Image 1 (cartoon, one colour):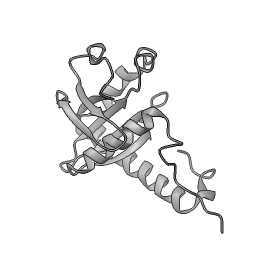
Image 2 (tube, helix red, strand yellow):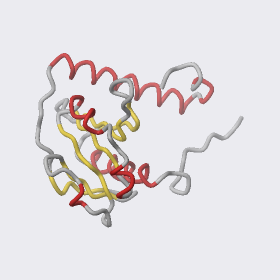
Image 3 (spheres, one colour):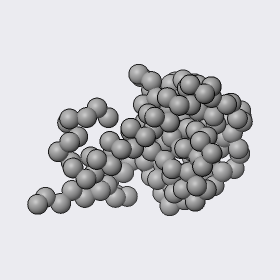
Image 4 (cartoon, one colour):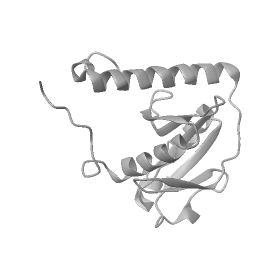
Length: 156
């Protein structure tokens, strides 16, 4: 039997480390999370969170000024969530970030919401579609952890 180890802090990229801290923090508030979910072709959110009341949050993790300034897709994420947040480390120049979005400061172990994102309620049909997409994404990820050979058989 082959040992398929999960990634550790040494193998994760800086944005993935931020995502880990964000996911831990959101879990402490009753959210479940998935990373790298594709809400629509050409888009891939860093973290999507499903809240205890069905609310959907998107968190875009930025590890540097260059990472932020090179990202032009984030506007496309707004139509797929109720609240949109940026997650950055404590050294990030937060004045670069749009003020009409949420702000989370994170590290690889935890996070803190410094500014709550404004709520833009999803339409019922979009919410249902995104909740289903979230569930399928999470189930595929779990299946791939339990059976690494399935990775090539499912799209994700």
